Length: 473
Ligand SMILES: [Zn+2]
Image 1 (tube, rainbow, N blue to C red):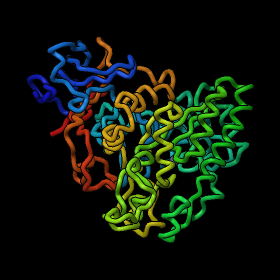
Image 2: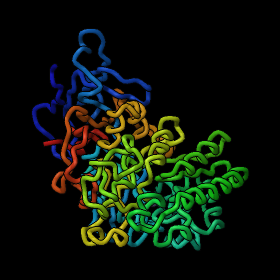
Image 3: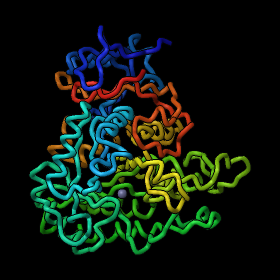
């Protein structure tokens, strides 16, 4: 079979330059806008999609969904690029490079920087850094819901909305006082913007280290109950149900949901028509708490006993696995996958959380929470696709139009390969695996439990707004 490689015309562009020409023939095109996938030719000229031609008959014979895939550029609802304040962990520039490598052309940054993005001046710093980076990755930001993320007074939501935030979040923590959450939801709703909630009832997770269950018990780690997430989700949904009667524009987005109970609450809320959306992360889909015990199987293969003969292949207590919310038991990972399949989960978001070695290479319970994940997201999701647990079209949908719909207008427009429009796409080879390594990761955060692991779906080229965001060697 012919190997399909994208051809970049006479001169190879560098990151940031307009892509003069990109020709991809006989690739597998996934178009989540049309809900269609199949063999196609794609031609990009002067940064615009010149032609998309679906192939049939003999022309289509060489294309396979397991080979070179073309999809719209991915949209990440949840990433931490650490600038301003912790540029040793990540900068806007290194984060954008990592995003391009992961196939992402739009990122929504969380506002828990130092200082936090609770006033427009900080947004100005982020925008200046994005412009200076030269990367074409579209950098959007959430603003804080409360001043200083302190949960007391609302941040200047109106000013932040005027400055162009996509919505509001105190991510890293929930908006803990219910009254503050209620006010923020109503005010944001009147501005037409969502609240993105990190659902974690803090009084139940103080000192918590790992999912409350068998693994935490055996390893002697302090349990992190599923109920902490579920109680927070239940509270927020009760408040949304009331607020939306007075403020029809009120919208709640629950980010990085990780438990069966929380997803079931969202499922029922959606049936009853509440304005709620949610996302799940690649690591909560693909990994389980068994990894902390040193058992490194994928969630969909898990038996529930990490100590099955031969399963433990790594040292236990790897601090790169410490994350908030914690990696859960297999039943919860399966629930995340089910939620994606039935549309309860609208999107896959990375919660890309780069950290320095100093913050991460310490005792498990003392390690900073988070996984550097924007470059490994596609590989983990494709793992589920390869295992037959997730259709490719649905996976791409949850990385593109799903998050775009959560953002809504005006931020979520422009997804898809439309003739005449600026090209915004990723080309990856499902048949080509790559090895995750500290060198291969463009993020400054090397805190990944997938280091030394092979993942499917090497990204060949990413184009954002007609300009080169990433090109494989
Ligand atoms: Zn969070």
